[in-house]
Amino acid sequence: MFKGFGRPKKKSVLEDNELTTGIVQHPVTGVWQTWISFTGHDIQCITAHKNRDEANQVAKQIASAWSEGKYKTQEEVTAFIQSLPTDAVIDPLPQNIVVQLSQQALSAKK
Image 1 (cartoon, rainbow, N blue to C red):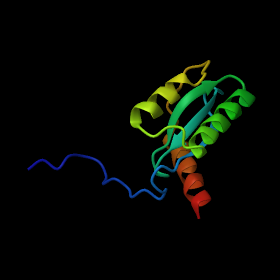
Image 2 (image 1 turned 90 degrees about the vertical axis):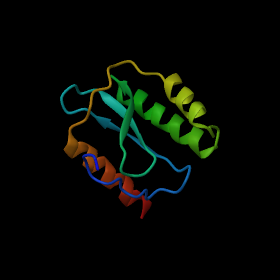
Image 3 (image 1 turned 180 degrees about the vertical axis):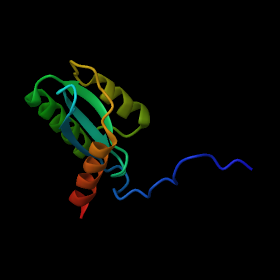
Image 4 (image 1 turned 30 degrees about the horizontal axis):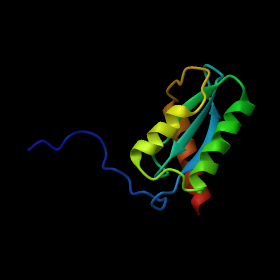
């Protein structure tokens, strides 16, 4: 029997339909990236910006739209994310930064 690779999925610490978001500066490119998490463990960068203020604006737009409950289905969420402005390449973050963001998301929940 094949069990696969990797660790078991971590249990979500966020409630259903809860989201956390923020911005982070990529350590190599210097580009500001907005990120989201639906569980507190899954950090996904979704936009990239040369200007910090623009990244902050997008993060606020995400938080506002989510708190208003505008998007209910996966298709609506995907369309919303794809509609967000971005003006740079989204680069993967180093693992240590992903861990730091996850810890921040989890500690904000406490």
